[in-house]
Length: 443
Image (cartoon, rainbow, N blue to C red; front, side):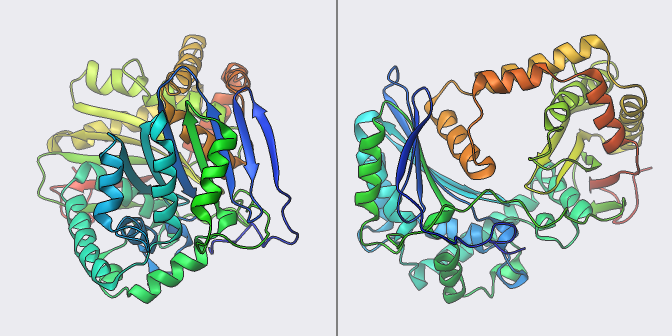
């Protein structure tokens, strides 16, 4: 899939506009199509700033596998105005922090500073994202860093098994590939390839600048426009890119097993299958189901596998969602000799919930966990900033807290049962990383 698949190019000039989305939340669309969205929190003395680009690893061709993550590293290595040391030292000198991360559908560059230092953070971060030079020497240095990062990831089987699971579900589709790329794709990638990806994909309509904290929206907009002036992102008129939709449901592989040999002390297991895309209205019921299955210490899986039998220290379920697809999985880490027993217990619980649904008590607890985790996750400026950006970039609107809580409260036991029956009452894929012969299931 390409970056514009399911979106389409802008066909008419965007109008400059500023509007209030919610109490304290405002959004401005610049002539270039770049969006600035802020939330004023006068009671805090901090400010969080994020530059979110709607481009991730699923937008890469096989030859560019890992380019998004490679680029994430390189954008902090120097611009026409600042060296890499100046980028980091200017923020650290005021006690702030900067970082970045790449996902399969977007990339984020962020900073957190005192409210009085927000102008500096805007200038530094916008400069890095908009006007990096990608010096060839830095490309070679970061290539080595990334290859070490990939090797380090392979030494973390509890993380690696989730990538194996994604491959089991999606195969060679970009959603099934490693975000970091592989040594085979990173080693030959050239500076020119990465630069072309940068300038072709990092366009103003794909970018959301989000900020939350003790700030003034109009001031933030002025700071962003000033920082963008004269950079490649200071372009002509365009509409913002709409949220990624995809042209059709992503094809997934038939259920099968992948066993990856590693000389580990534990067996790492993920069992699951395709889930729901983030635009699916059943996602609220899925959230409740996930909490009931393995969302906490009171969940079915935790109680059955850890509390009652002591077979695993870590056991949980999770749901991953993309624009047009998703997955649901159960993870457990256990002694290799116990892997078969743990896997059988997981299957029993998944079959039970798919056949019988959940109890009224579980429904209340699953709802409460969903609401609590959402509201408690909005207690700092960084999480508020992330909420703004993800809502705009991924959904195109900002759902109010009260509306979201109401949607969770409206979930019924019947809806949860229907989702469970749809997703879990079918053959599931298994990913295992541990001291087993490759291709052979633990006995």
